[in-house]
Amino acid sequence: MLNQNQIPLLDALKANSARPHAPFYTPGHKQGEGIPQPLADLLGKAVFRADLTELADLDNLFAPQGVIQEAQQLAAEAYGASQTWFLVNGSTCGIEAAILATCGTGDKIILPRNVHSSAIAGLILSGAIPVFLNPEYDPVLDIAYSITPNAVESALQQHPDAKAVLTVYPTYYGVCGDLSAIANITHQYNIPLLVDEAHGAHFGFHPELPTPALAAGADLTVQSIHKVLGAMTQASMLHVQGNRIDCDRISKALQLLQSTSPSYLLLASLDAARQQMALHGKMLMSRTLQLADEARTKISQIPGLSVLSPPLKGGLGGSSGFVTLDKTRLTVTVSGLGLTGFEADEILDEKLGVTAEFASLQHLTFIISLGNTPADIEQLVQGFTTLAKEYCRSNLTVKNQVWLNLDRTLDYALQLSPREAFFAISEILPLTKINKRICAEIVCPYPPGIPVLMPGEVITKPVLDYLQQIQAMGGSIGGCADSSFRTLKVVKE
Image 1 (tube, rainbow, N blue to C red):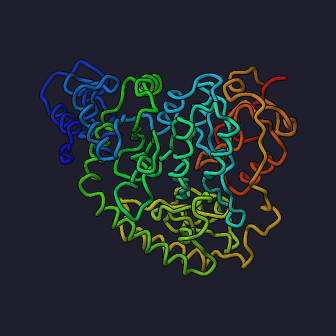
Image 2 (spheres, helix red, strand yellow):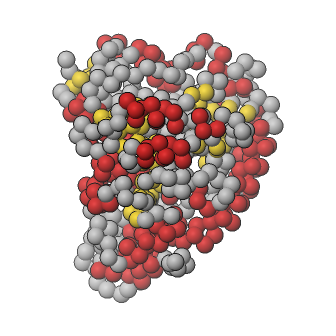
Image 3 (spheres, helix red, strand yellow):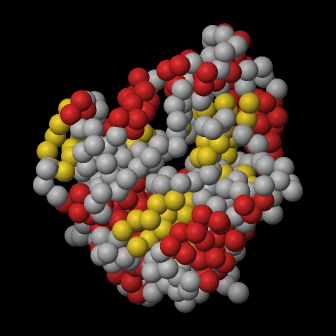
């Protein structure tokens, strides 16, 4: 057992930032002496004294033998991994590395259609061929759940040559599928299960939270420590267990994807966040769950609103894509107020001082984490109370209005591999002229960053209609070159 009280990387950074010396190395601001004054006024100079490079005592991220290695070993033990890598380019580079380490050009990988855009980037970089599975979908709530074990088993029967299975656990809504069953099925084919666990870094620290991916049998998982825990934005971790993953390929892939000038502020924040959770995680998560339960109870009692709740025990179980819910993730359905999620989000943010994680057509989703306070919850509840009293339009739900009568189970056809389409000769055409053409770029409403179109897919009118209606309702379309979404890049015929 390692001493989880230790914070070796943070301690080394603190010592080096206080060491008197004449700096003749990067970064150019020289521990804050050259920082522009407006930036120093905002952040203070202390943070810049610790903005150091790979000095002798601070180790090397790509060949760690000192304090970074020690910090990663402590993290591996805290999270139940055999090996852990610190990521300074977010979970994005971790997902890309996972695909690069398991798939080459032409190799098949099984994954849900509602993956994050980072997985699509991994397909483009690796040349892998996706075998997409549609997640289980709730047409009443208009929420996609997880892929099911049955779907994974069927896909592996049809594609026994697949090199890996990748799944999202939890989803952006906090929904968790039956990961243990998926792991068992995947391992029958002796291939690795990769998990995008970006929003589940807190699972291992409280028994009332869903089972962590590694404990459920995943071979590799990527966690955004910054999203739900105490690290700085962009700071994430990649964990591996077992022998189905070539760790050397992970390290080499990360050398391609991560900056050669990693921020020690980010790295040290990972070390500190690990220590915080290892020592106080259960207490912090107990308090967080209590705040989340209070918000869920009070908001669900407001007329016109409902909240996404965990499935009843003994319900659909392992055949379902919704086995359990991360209760620190709060999704509120606002369509009962006659508002779209985008409209409600704008009102709450601009007029009531409450900012959501993301909005969708019918819902708003909030992350309740260890950084939230009882005052935050009070403001959240009061914001929804005011929204329901003063901004309710009617008792008609948004989903019953003609302009949102959409079939979210849209059909997709992959004509080229994502890599082929991305690097193909392309042209830019107006939306009126691209029906049945092959998309050459990633198109996704953001957040949460789930692509609706990706390179290699055939563009259809229902998909375009859906994207345009999201835009008309106040959502933004990202990923594509034309931010106004009047044109799209397609493969030239």
